[in-house]
Structure formats: C-alpha cells, structure tokens
Length: 121
Image (cartoon, rainbow, N blue to C red):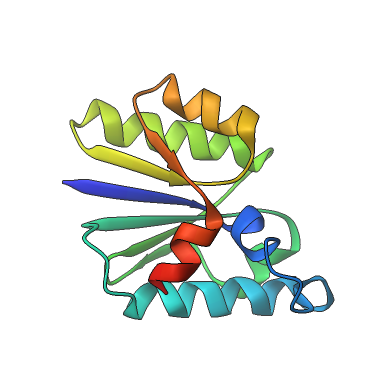
C-alpha cells in the first residue's frame, strides 16, 4: 500500500489565495481536490487543525481519510505516518516544515513539498 499524509495547514498556507479569511473553506477545497486527484496513493490522510477542522468532518470519503488533530498538527502527522509505516506501507508526507520533515523521516516516511502536491491537483 502507498499512503500519503497531508499537512493541510502547510499546503493551504503555501498559496496566498485568501485562505486566512476562510480556513474551513480552504480545507474543504483541498479535501475536494484530493478526492478527484489522480495519484498512485491507496490512502490519503488529510490532517486538519484549528479552524480548518470546521471544513471537513472526521472520517473516510473514498480513498481520503480526514483526521482532526487534538493538539499540535505535527504530532498527529507523525503518528499517522508511523502507523502507516508500521503496517508496511510506503509513506509520503506533504509538508514544507523542515523540522516535521526530519521527524517523519525518523519513522520511515519520505517528505515532499506542498508545491509537489499542488502540481498533482
């Protein structure tokens, strides 16, 4: 299996398109784009935090599973990556946060930039 874990705040924040005026709406648009994107991933895990959680409810929608971070989004992202890696999945995490990239590398995941994902959408 191939799992893609998406740092939604980092991806949404990478484009100055007014997302800060409607964080929930920005999360919903990203979720919708992931649903129809043609990627090789069996599962896409969309991690939301803060006000963005109001845009998409927790749960599975097709191959996209939405998770609401209880605390820091980074901790949830690392936990999701580790869980997938422990199942034997090939795991990719989308984030530009260098500290988070190092953390997910430590659990066996590869990190790619938000621009890579946006090019896929």
